[in-house]
Image 1 (cartoon, rainbow, N blue to C red):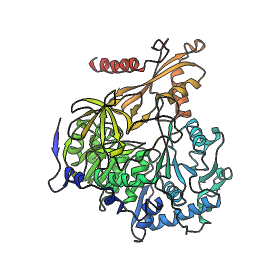
Image 2: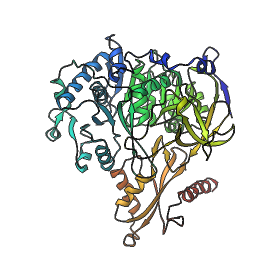
Image 3: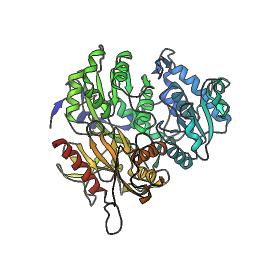
Image 4: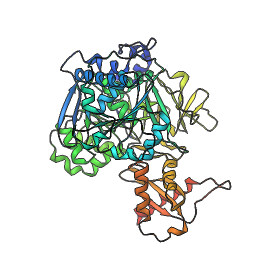
Length: 560
């Protein structure tokens, strides 16, 4: 283990914990969590008094750049909220966006929250099946999308009302119920924010599961203090920072901490619409003078693999960097320090809870490489054995949140009760950790079959279900296989119908089928056709045997 201490002028973690109170965080909000508040007011309006204060800087896929002040975001979000109100959409209704990282996305998020409605993210890599499922479960009232994504809706049953981001003369405009720019231009730029209670949802998320479809997670307004705490002390966000969270707002880390979190602190956030490449990322870091960066380990690994390109982008001046989504390799931590002269800190969280553990940028403590760090003040994290007893130092157990002693904990269960993740006072994360005995934990893996690949958490059940939709597939089992760049890739073991024996391109057909129906990040990069799958006497697939086989394949290839 490699431990290094934070600088001596920082507030110590231990001292901060001793003096911590939720009330000290609540003082940073204008609304009252007891009597009601509006999320858009908290993350936008209260920063709009300074007409020059920038809320968003962005680069579009075509290379055009721009910025929007908090004042402009307030005005534009009011127009969107007025449109929602004209459609009878308000408190509690779900409004979805199938958009890339563009200003229009942020306007829709803020306008939805201003109206007291619930924002529902849709990842642009989703296929029609994933979109249809989420529409149906959430009873979505409106979807906002663009011309690139429009075709996906053709294969979705029961599509809600549609709003299209497109030029006025685009032929697709006639197919949509509303056009974004012209519709908003007709709306008033004044809208009184609708207040919601602390327990009322403002985000409708979905998270992967090992059995069945994705589970719903409704995030309540009382999550905001936890978001504030993470951004301020773990990410170490300062007013002087240029902050960029690379994560897509179609997922929790991007939505919570690339939109809500930085705007909550009144800081400028950055959107890069273009897909991730080493050149594009380095140029964005240079052009926008990014000083505070957050990304999944995959991003850091791909930059490391293209280290020679860094010399082409002089002037990159990162102050701090953060990583989340999967464990960060110590080798990568050392490389970031060498390449950019800044520390990258590993953080841990879930869609359900937000971030709960971190190596902190703004609090002093020993930093442990290959560790998820220390519990965020306001949480008590423990590791539990099979009998739900808290384990001793050096022992392995399932990471759990002690809800009775975690005043920032906000998750109260899945939206449609898809699973019961609680045992008494504990919320069970499903992640296995080692207790380090000093308040920190080190991640060892999942206690189920969730696959963490390139920062995404992929439920094998959904991939298997997609594969089974193809007429060639009789059975399938999906596992994670170690991979140097992505951490893990999805591998599928498939039993096919005899009629499809010898079909040359069947593996590619199946890959494309999953990409189309589910998403472009969940498809199996490897497919192995087998005669049968290993099962228990009761017929349950033994994925652990297949995982072991996949791991042995990697070891064999490495030693060859």
